[in-house]
Image: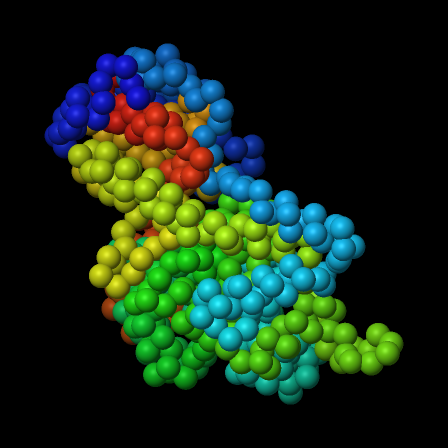
Length: 500
Ligand SMILES: Cc1ncc(COP(=O)(O)O)c(C=O)c1O
C-alpha cells in the first residue's frame, strides 16, 4: 500500500480535467512493420512533433512523481502462474515408481473420470493440450456434418484435404488464436462474430444475423472468455434452429457455471486447457468433453496415431500424437483437488479490484450475475471512454499521451511493468489480426468483408470486440498474490490517472 494513504485518499478524477499541453508521450517500436501501417504511424508521430511533444522510449515511471512512495515488487507479480500444493508430486511419483511413464496409466484414467464427473458429461478424453482437443472437436463435428474426418474421402474434397474444406465456421472473434486455428488446419474458413458488451463473449444477436445471411453454415465455436460464461442457452437455441453443431472453448473457464451447468458441457463438444497459466494446470494438457461413446472412442483413436485394432500397426485414418502423458495427468489430478479453492481465491481478487477501482472510471470484465458464476480466471478491466487518454495502436507498436484524470491500458501496462508487475492487453480480436483481417466479421450492425448480398445497409458497424481490446487490460490475477501486493497494483493504476 502506498505510504501516503489508501484508496480513500485518492482523488476521483474529473472527466474534464485535461491539461492544456500534453505532458507525456511514449512510443514503442517494433523492428518489422508493414510499410503502409508504418507510414500512418510515422505521420501521426510527425504531426505530434509539430505540437512540441517530447517523444521518448524507455520512459522512467519510477522517477515520475505520480508514483512516488511506490516500491517495485521484490518478486515479479504474475498474471496467473501455477500454484502447486503437494498432491501433484504424489501422483507424479506414483507414475514414476510404477513405471507408467507413458501415455497410458492410472493418472490418465482417474483424471478422465474426475473431469467427466465434475463437468457432468459422459466422457472426457485427456490430450496433450487444449488446442489438440479443439482440433479433435473440429474433426468430430466435420465428420458428423460433412461425412469425412479428413476431407479426402468426400467427392468434393477429393485430393484437397481438410475435413472442413470449403466450409465456413462461425467463431468468436475476441479470443486467443487457438480457438480458431483448428478450423484452418482442416481447410475451413472462420467467419468472426462480434462480442456482446454484457459479457464480452459472442453476441447471440450477431450470430443470428450471420445465420440469416449464411444459412449453409453448420458449425459454431464459442469461447467463454477469461472464465466468464457466454450466453450459452441463446447460442445453443440459435444453433439448434439452424441445424448447427456447437463447440465450446472452455479452455479458460473450467469450473464456471451457466444456469447451474458447467461450461464445456452445454455444446456438442467441450474443451478445457491445463496450460501453465490456467485455473489449474498440468504444465500443459487439455481435455475433450463429449456425451457420446463414439466421439470419445474416435478422439482417443485419432489422438494415438489412429492405430486400428490389429497386432501390427494398421492405419485407415490420419492420426495425431495428441495423447496426454501419465505424468502430466498426475499433476492435473493433484491440482483438481484444489480447483474450487482456486476459484474462490480468484473471485476474491476480482472483487477487491472491483471495489477499489470503481471510482476511477474503470469497470471489471462484466458477467451476468443472475445466470452465471464465472471462475474469475483473469480479472480484466475496461476504462470508461471519458477517462481514456489519447492513444494509438498499430500492428506491433503503440503510442499514448497522458493527460490529467485520464489514462489508457498501455500506460497502465508500462507503469506496472516498471514496478515488476505483469499485465496483458486483452486478446486482440481475430478479425483485426493480419492473419484473419480479410475474413468476414459480423456485428449486430453489419458485416465487414461480406459479399454484396449481405443484409447490411451501407454503414460502419459498431465493433464491440475492437473497443474492448482498445480500452481493456488483464490485471495480475495470481492467487499467490498477497493483499499488499494487490494494493500495489491498485495504487499504480490510480497513480496513472493523476497529473504529472
Ligand atoms: C481461449 C483459449 N482457447 C484455447 C487455448 C489453447 O489451450 P492450450 O494452450 O492448452 O493449447 C487457450 C489457452 O492457451 C485459450 O486461452
